[in-house]
Image (cartoon, rainbow, N blue to C red; front, side, top):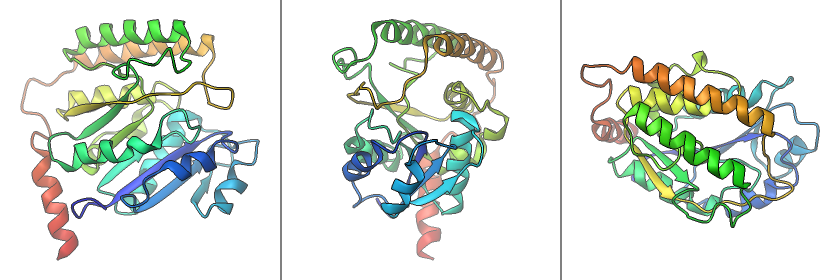
Length: 258
């Protein structure tokens, strides 16, 4: 807990048996109140390892996709009373040691969403990121910034933290169950007026880390551009739904101590 705010980490898992224990070991447990793992019908021992480690584990009987997994993660986190939710991949690609930095950015009241940016780290390729993915990431991010009128370094990171109002106000159920879910969520949050901060985050690419194929990457890329265009067209010309989340967080702390 930070400043009276309950922190819940969610782990959207698929075939993560080999990396889950390492991921869990590096999470700063002194600030995390609950950890939820949602297994998306893995064919390996992910569920057995999670339960052995004592994690709160939810199992999808059939594969719902990356977006479908996250929807379950966020529903469970909100049900647990989370004020700040951190989404961390259990494949050990993103370092859990920066979780505190993401949480503090939101707890400060300056931002509603915090992203762990591989591009700001300036070591993505050195960490094993395929060159074609790096180039595509930079090109798509440039296009989205121009379309959306933003200045983010990366829209495609899988390391994210959210203040509770973001998860409550976005229509998560309407988003895709596939990989483009992340992008739809972020674009919708920007369209709603939520504030986004970034933290430099090194990343690791290795055999046991998850990665989508070239074909699915291309499909994702087109989905990203379509999403950015849709939300740019629908950008509201009135006051954003949430313009000052900091008072919302203070109200949450007061209600917890009442």
